[in-house]
Length: 524
Image (cartoon, rainbow, N blue to C red; front, side):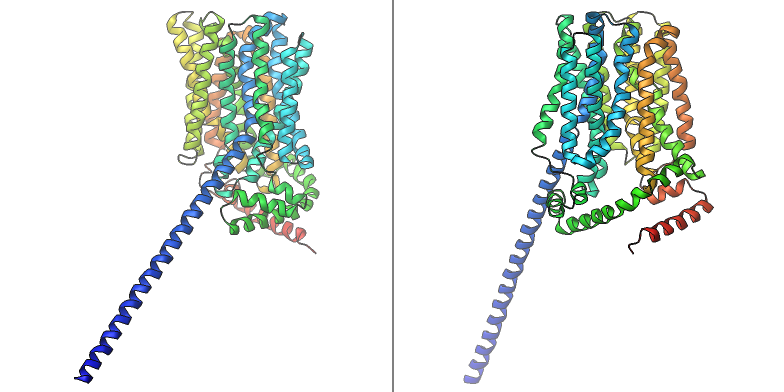
């Protein structure tokens, strides 16, 4: 009995011990699970905070793009009252409107060296100060000459801002979000155009010697927000590394990346790129030689990149935006308030469809959107030309003209507007990308300036309807250009995109050249 009892006790104790150990194991496992869940929640919260911070930086950096859009939009209406108040000629009107594109190009070219010298963040601030000065001079100008001085300063400020915003965003954004965040400046340009149109409409009822001054003066407001933003946004980590401020760069990367591993990987990439910078400076002359005397593959890249930049402008988008009141007056709308109200519809349409493009560009691909864009623009430009030529001043003609203009800017914004910048940044190899993209930007700005500075003179010579028929023909050619010269780059690495432009023999030659370059740049 004793043995049996002892056996039972032993078994009982053994079972009790097993149960206790099992329960303890379950508790520990639950504690580990709770701890893991807590860690996941903290990581998720950190990722959310990081994303909010990076988006805020991208928004603040893009405020300079609002200045460009606002200036383009507001000048379309302000010019009506400037002409009335200062009694300027048609040629002076064209110069005043179109000079911004040419001068902003000079600002962009100077912005590169400036941002290397004083940093990306403070170049954003400098752009705001220069634009503020120009806007203030324009708002207070007593004559056309003083107005032009303010316009030149505003153009330089805009050039600085437009150049530095995508550079700053690309350098501060984590890799996974770089594509969507670098599209922010384009969105803000369109938002600025809409604000300019709304400002025109809001102040058009004031006396002619006051309203245009307020319209232009309001453009100072985004610059004030930029001043506050400089106390929030950090400096670019790449610029800090180049200045040998490694710890500061690491601190910035900790705010813009989700994990310590990502921070260290990104820092290693930046250090490697900064180490190669000096070698690349010595290769600059060779790069320009390669661009000016290109191989067949580089020639195809240049035709595609520079061609799409020029087609973006010579299809008349800036003429449509700058001179929409002139177009609607030709269609039969009378009264400045009605003209400016119609332009608000144009600005709203342009802003709405740029958002559509941002969502579709990585889903549908570049080329399908370019087809939709160029074919749609061609159709709208043809309809606008026919409407202005044949419909007279009737109500139907006015409605069709407004629909055609809104359709034109919608198709532009959904395709060739944003995609031209995406394609031109993707197709060039790394060694040529900066210089070749700059060349394309020069073509874009010069084309924009020529169109804006000649629209009124050409319209006087061949009518507004005839001018838009010319734009229709150019737009039809752009469809053929997209078909023959623009490859689909969606989902392809930059190396795969480069191969699309090469013959098999060229591919072998390029690989040998790259190998030689790597050997040459290898530290001794």
